[in-house]
Image (tube, rainbow, N blue to C red):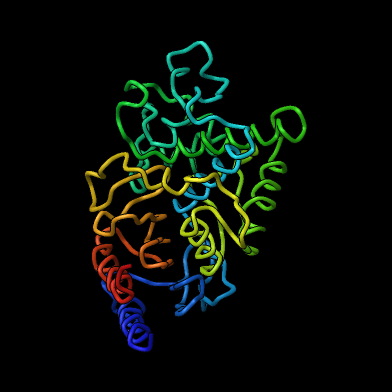
Length: 334
């Protein structure tokens, strides 16, 4: 292990270097056999929204799209409770009596809804994502995404879509609300309690904070704040196939559902499962990816979870991926 730690430390030196080509690293946690064996923290730069400062083990940082995988876990919990059936038509009231009524919850999980959605984080004029998060759709993100036109047959074409995940999040929230109070929940209280009591609490993610839009829908595409260690705890839940502290939280095989190949990302070196990414050069892996270089990578064959949080531009991702791979490889396989 001393040699392994040294290899990881060398990789971390590159990640946290002032002139690192991938940008800024804010946190790195390496968890092996369920124990943190290495961690390092950086400094949050100033932004137009807030002053920066040192990052530490207790600093909560944004998930961005890593939240999609947390939404996948929420679906699994609802499935385990008998509240949802992924093979059934998605319970979206606006779609009743329309061609969209053929869209199943599985289609949504697979990012194969057939709905128009342009996932762009820069050009506001052509981005449904930015319009949903900050513009016309910000008060009811799921309704905005659900209203977009159907341009493909459901289940036929893969299209990565934050809107799809927010529709899923509303479906879970409504199912949970109906189970608790006998009708779809008004406001976030039922879903907040569900996440806290059924996911964050049992896994020890005590810092985790889920954000909701004004309509009361969990913004499952983008907004969970937590410490790097708590994001690692989430990764550990999937490494252990949905079991935490000898208690099964997720349905048997839910991890394998997550890492079932659905599509190859034409713009990158990754494959896509169900609200999780797959590192194709690490068979059996699954990973949460988020904007600006947020990663939880789960490698079951190495009994390893690696979390990286930072601010990395798209053109700096390859150096970042190379550093992360050097950490994975320090632990070997099997």
